[in-house]
Structure formats: structure tokens, C-alpha cells
Length: 251
Image (tube, rainbow, N blue to C red; front, side, top):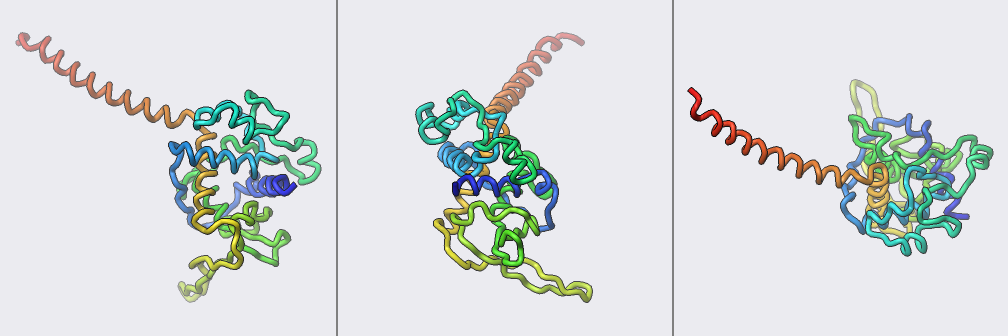
């Protein structure tokens, strides 16, 4: 039930309406780990435990996780519900009818979530990475939580037991005769089950998995592109020398 609840509240925070809003809070750069098999495997585990209860990844099949180094046995034993088959798509454990009845909106599909918020400020991965690391307790909010990246967010912190509780330290800055409060740092309030470093590491792994899931062939495409460019470079040299040989006697 705890994981189901965590997934349900995550649905509210990553809905289309939520992603359409935001603030001027700067985005942190998400670590690039889409080539790190251990990070992707850990991210897949976090995704299944904290997201898949309510969010589907309807364009991803479980057996595609072989590409990140998992066997069918590992997938079936650690990352699937007992009623699923390894060839099934990653569907949420909640029916859309119930989700809409309980929350007024169906949880969004997360297959492409890491690509949906790309902007001049940063990538979609940067947005999700920052969002999950910008929560703080606010007793004045209905949920008891708020978020610096997404002020007045309607979702409680889905990973608060892992991160713990903290509060932002604000600094008053005067500009053109007006005083505004700007974020300075974080102050710990209550420790979670993970240290700050461990939490950032795990959120980075989760975001890396979301990046990989959004385009599993991206790394292969980049590697192939490098070889194609090298081939074209070599072919250009050969073609240049052949052209010189063919025309050397032409005056």
C-alpha cells in the first residue's frame, strides 16, 4: 500500500498540468549515466517500486530490459508483478477508471517523460532530477509539502522517506528598492533512510533509467553515427586521391 500511495502522489506531480507550470528556479544538471548498466538497473528497480504502481510505460516491454544487462529471470523475479509476462508492456497496477475516479485525472504515461520538458533552461532529465530534489516541508500547504522548482505543487514528496525532510534557507536581496527572497542553501530537518549523497545518487539513477527508456537505441545510434562519420572521412580522402589520379594527365 505504501508503494501504491507513493506512485499515486507521483502521478499528481508529474501530470501534464504540473509539467506545464514552473518557476525561475535553476535546473540542476542531471548526471549522464545512460551507458552505466548498474545505474540503469538500479533506476529500473526504483521505477518499478515507486512509479509503476500508478504510471504506465506503455511503449516499453519488460523484455527490453535485457538491453541494460538483465536476464529474463532477473526481470521476472525482481521487476514484475506476478500476473505479468516478460513480453508484456509496463502497465500500471491501477485501472484508468479507478485513477480518474479517485484523483480526477489519469496518471500520465512516463515512457517519454525525460524528453517532454526540454527547454533552453535544460533537458527533461534535468527538470525531473531537480524536481525530485527540491521538496521541502510546508505545513501551510494541504499536502504538507511544497517545491522550489514547482511552487504550490499538488503532490507530496514521493521519496521523502528516502531523502528525509529539509527546509530552504532564503536570503533577502535588495534590487531597485525592492526586497526579494532568493534561495541560498538547504538546511536538514529530519534524516531519511539515505544520506544526501546516496539520495542524489539514486535519483540520478532513476532519471538515467527514464532517459534510457525514452530512447533505448540512443546510445547505439550515437555509436553508429561515430563510425559513419569516420567512414565518410576516410572515404573522402580516398575519393580525393582517386580524383587527383584520374585527372592528373588532363591539361
